[in-house]
Image (cartoon, rainbow, N blue to C red; front, side):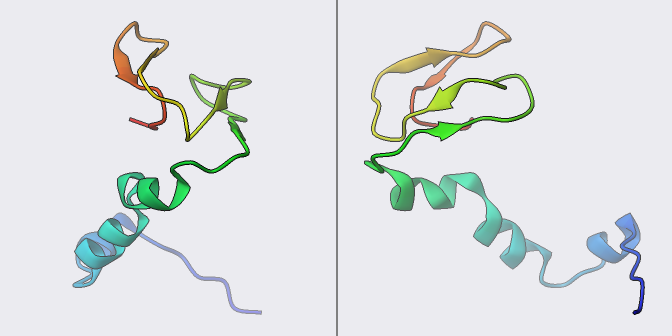
Length: 74
């Protein structure tokens, strides 16, 4: 078994990083998840224990006090 190390330099020098970043960006997933019937339960971070309903509308209050779209991970 070969162990691989990923360094910040190798990421920064990757010519495909913009393509990868765009493909993995949560906002690019939003259309696919919109109106999904099953809420997503957040396991870690500031929203740990909360559920995100991708079919929701309006605004949600973030732990920082800021408002964000209710169905967004922003």
